Each structure stands twice: as structure tokens, then as C-alpha cells.
Image (cartoon, rainbow, N blue to C red; front, side, top):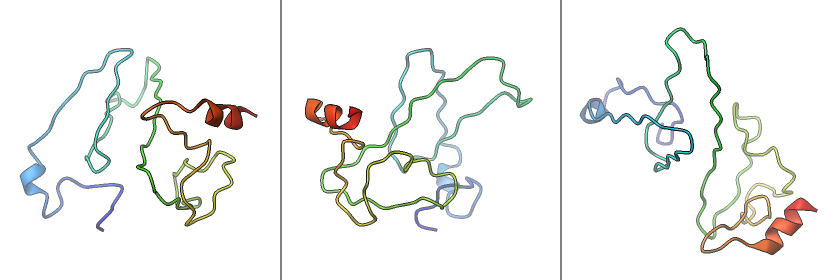
Length: 114
């Protein structure tokens, strides 16, 4: 599929990328940002048992004029847990999808917290 979520790096057509691997060893407080079409994964312990805690803050960036698409019920999508009130096809405009660039919007934060 053109916009697959899970990618098998061994599949036909990805041969040129198979050996182009990067590894990052993060430290507490580090932040990783990657292009949304970058193939990425997090490797856990080989035995599957975590002996330390891993806390993650995830997010998605959307450019101005983006349209909201309701993906509830598609499996594993956690993007619609808020009470933003948007319907499929509406302009992505809600305090639950805050504007943070070029500057934080205090009015948006007040609306979200009320």
C-alpha cells in the first residue's frame, strides 16, 4: 500500500534502503524528531522484559489548512481520545490541536483547560 503503517524492510522495492540504518542511543531528556514517512522502530530488551521505565511524549505536526480525518475504529489509533468535537472532513482547528508555532496561543490553552 502507498501509505502503509507497518513496513517490512525485506519487501521487494526496498533493497536500496535495507542497509541504510541509523541508530540513536538516547539519554534522559533527549528528543527525536523524524519525517513522518521515515521507517522507524524502537527495539526493546531481547527477552521482552523491561527492567527500567520508558516514558514517551508523542505528537504529530500538521500544517495550516489540514483536514481532520476520524480514524477511530481503525485499530491502535489513539488520536481521538480528546473531546475536540471535530467531524471527519472538518478543518483541523481546535484547542485540542494547539498552534505552537510561531508562538503558543494562550487563548487556546484557556479554552482547552475549561
